[in-house]
Length: 256
Ligand code: ADP
Ligand code: MG
Image (cartoon, rainbow, N blue to C red; front, side, top):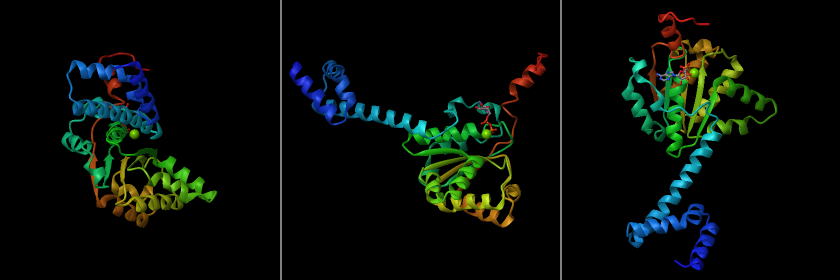
């Protein structure tokens, strides 16, 4: 390939927004020569590589914008530590048909059992598959919505919780809400109903949600929409946070 042609290809590639082709033309051509590729195979390689780079970039940007607290995956999760957890159910969820169906997932259990970890892992999987995701704690969402309401921007703020394909709502039930706050949550849940998935974690059983939302009728209305299409994943086991402490104590080590 002459320098003239190569430079022209690089110029066209840059103009067309194909940065990988512009940067890796020589390597790609060398690979085509080594593998004795036909025209179709070579074109396929070019487009595949370009798409791969683009997907990778999109994934990294989407992860950055998602506000996930970390990027732990299912591979980082020690299922043996949580023997009562239904591994198959979690793996099925990671296949993401719930996102396609605009259904919800509720991870329920006491502190430290890995609810947030699993919610994040499923969100990362969804992000990788090209779905938009957003992470918030319930309390943070409520205070954001309240603040927006006081300055007359509730609809705009609400949109940021309605737009993503998967909204992770972490820590439902840690702090009780008053009636107005619970009403904001109801509005969000009602608008997302059959329109987009909610992945929530809670340390409270559904029967306790009346106390969380300060109103039985409102809690029932929220649960009605939330649970119509919902996979419930109970995690009843030991806290992973305390794991090392117990091991240390059993070993007689000094624990501060
Ligand atoms: P929860 O949200 O239920 O309170 P987290 O998901 O925040 O608990 O878990 C607490 C910490 O322990 C996190 O750092 C998480 O990654 C880790 N963790 C919890 N369960 C497991 C597990 N089974 N395997 C590996 N790490 C775990
Ligand atoms: Mg948590």
